[in-house]
Length: 332
Ligand SMILES: [Zn+2]
Image (cartoon, rainbow, N blue to C red; front, side, top):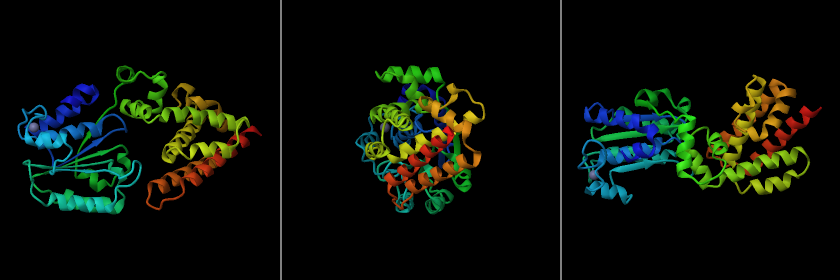
């Protein structure tokens, strides 16, 4: 309920879930789909409290019962949160084994048990298969709440065993207004664009000062292209940042090149600050070369998310050098 007031665009999903619960038609596994940063996890957090609450009025958790107090203290024994130990990394198979143990025991303080897991695409194939067992043989008192930012990366067998709900982001104006009420930051439009219209993502970018790094990233690429900076100095700066985030910006930049080649207007690009560079590359680089860069980028992202622990600075260095090569080539 609180979440539906705080994030009005998720209210329809909250109401649907509550109705299913009231009519005893709620599945034992729920999967929320939708882009990152629109409130799926926040919604499921509150819904898990609602499921565990001992005195709910049917609308939301009561916030007063013994279960709600445990929930607020962050120590509810009947709630298991399963998320990557580090942002952007995989959910480990040992974490899924914990789920199996958890669902096979009876509730301690509530009448139900809840597993909240996400993002579900952070499970690799072995973890997904391990989770399937819990999905296939549900215990009556257990509800699994899953969320995913990239449903196309999930095993079909996982999806088919869940009741699926798609959470839509707010429209642009609604998102911008919401952000304005929650942040004093200037340039909210550019932030919301960077967050692909997801308001919570935009707030997170502000809190982590990622948007400051993003503006610096754009400036550094412009300086490198004009030979106003050396790449080793730039790399020395970037190596203190989250390599996964930098790869994400290169990915958006590459998509901008493809969009430009397809005739998409500058206003529709993600990294508008570098539209000059994406236009240059789009005009002069062959399809196969761009595809080669994109393949390498996707491999770097996979390697970074995986458990092999590659050197992130080396991955970024390679991408930077390759991007500069594409730019240089387009000058000929
Ligand atoms: Zn309660």
